[in-house]
Image (tube, rainbow, N blue to C red; front, side, top):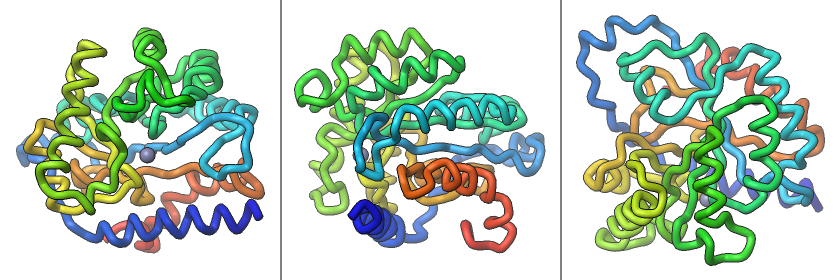
Length: 270
Ligand SMILES: [Zn+2]
């Protein structure tokens, strides 16, 4: 049953990835800046949803999440923010040797109750892409107070659109409202610029990306499997989704450590 559910989730994610296609938008980076950046800087961007006890593949049990965070620290990874990733990829700053951006989508309350204490225990930064229309309203989602408290403790809050609607099915004015109003609502409540986006269900296309850019996002994250480097598109950044599955920890190590060898076979990009 659990396996079938996982297959369904993976299939849905794959459809999202493939339907989003190969549209490309290059970050606007001056070429002389790029030339100064060391080749091969790659950023691991992990994508989680819930952290709790459930058979849902998108829910990571806390003991596994703890083990995964311990593994990152013991393996020499340095956690970074979306702004640090952006600056590093643009060549404005130099990234640490093994950078990792830990992200959560949707803004579930267990990110506060279960994940936040573990992140704090290991001194790790993380980013939560929240749905502001759900914040403090829908049961099971984070409140504004929790968001503000976490931001004092190394967590960055960014946008996952206003209502988590399927953007590719919406007319332009509604896509624009989902992207812009979420940004404004988060900025009003949190008191800092919101410049990074994660597409709901990871689905995007060139048109949605161009609206995201027009309303003021600097970059946007998909669930396209891979790491972020100088070849990435600012509005189609790769992530590595992490699931609870039959052997969760083995799958975690494989997904994050085998990236390089998969890439060398050309199976990730191009
Ligand atoms: Zn989502």
